[in-house]
Amino acid sequence: MRAMRGVILPADSKRGVITAVYRAVGAPSWAAPNLDALADVLRDLSWLPARPVRLDWWVSARLPAADRATIAAVLATAQAESAGSGRPITVWRREAPVG
Image 1 (spheres, helix red, strand yellow):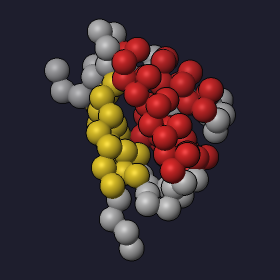
Image 2 (tube, one colour):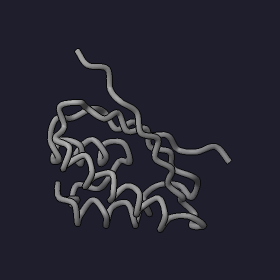
Image 3 (cartoon, one colour):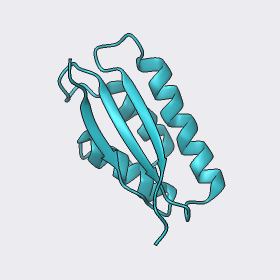
């Protein structure tokens, strides 16, 4: 089965990355731009067809290291928790070109 592919565009803030994740998965408008809501959105994904979800996260060098680590942890948890579900998440982390 072909995966739904979403691109998480580079952002320089935690809020910006969360918003980019929401765009990548077509999250509902009720999704708040905070880490708890991000985890909830990634646990649900019921608005997507039942198939694998691949997220390509382009990480900005300007995103603070602490925010990068926290978001990475939320994405890793979502990936682990979704394994075996109808919408398993795979996150591919890439460094965005500096420019």
